[in-house]
Amino acid sequence: MPTLSIKTNTTSVDRISQSDVVREASALVADLLGKPEAYVMVLLEAGVTMAFGGTEEPAAFVELVSLGSIGGEKNKTISKGICEFVQAKLGVAPNRTYIHFIDPPRSNFGFNSSTFAK
Image (cartoon, rainbow, N blue to C red):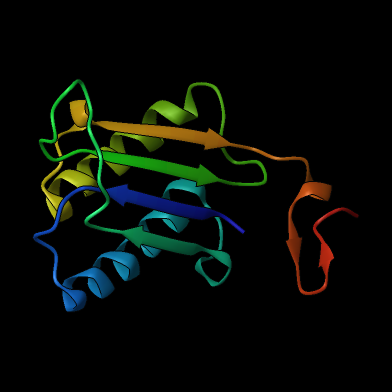
């Protein structure tokens, strides 16, 4: 159930490129977390009105939600991978990207008419 949400003020990404970005990001998240890609969801919102550090230079806010597989030192590796990807695909520098890591309780994430709680 890993979910990667990318919001950016970048407008240089056309609709076809956006599709490529979400597909490639899906594979990246699966690889970084060691989880099956069949459960990965990726959202991309480009052209969002956004200021970072008082300017509207290219910036991104990324949220990564995962039941486990994130936390502590591992987040540094994941952050590096995501920042490199966002820079390569969207032109946003790592120092203009925030990443929010979220590891919710299994009972607080729904899927298929239930939750992931056992």
